[in-house]
Length: 311
Figure 1: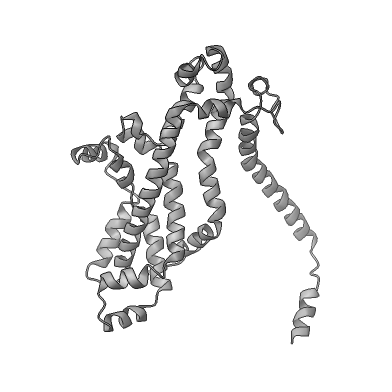
Figure 2 (figure 1 turned 90 degrees about the vertical axis):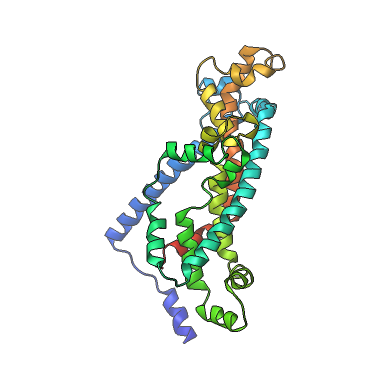
């Protein structure tokens, strides 16, 4: 039997002319898509370590030109950037832990049978398509005393309905109901079963949710832009948005480098370095998310497959 399988694997399937044409066109198409996707990222990286004059002259195309780290030096001298970086780390870690816990707790509740379950699912799903709007949300947050506090960055968008449905599907499909029945016979209630049975068996979905929530919170600039006025509380992405907006306006680079104009050789030199600093800002802000995706890639793919199941 093993010999037959081996022989079968050795059989070469002859491709027809149409198959060869399709494979060639398909390969070329995806190479073009890959190039369109990766080249802008590569251009940002090489521009961030190139001489500003070479970047302005358009000489930076495929490789760095006149290697220089002046852009990164200028960005790292901006103290507010480091404060916002620490804020984003805090908001991402604490917010993701809270989001994962609430999502799993709600998913467990939705995985159980109870009266009115269909109505609850309908109301939760309804929020995926409709919301009260920005103004009611802002007024509600302000009336609760959340405006201009660190708490609003943690509580706002704490639960994603999509992630909730993914977690519910995982619990329903991966944790057998017989385990719940056995736990009940041993005297366990819902809290005991959730903490001692569901959570220990949900390592995969916890990793998936951590990736989803972590990346979303790290990239969140809008919450800080709307709900925070104290610059000491602003996250990294909001600060970077302000920097990139200021550097994109001619002559406004002094808002970013005014405090360091003397050290940088004057405002003219500061504006020169601002041309590469904007690329450095993008690199600095995206590296943590890219690293997270690289190390958690298998869980990310697993999460997509979980979400594709009917449940």
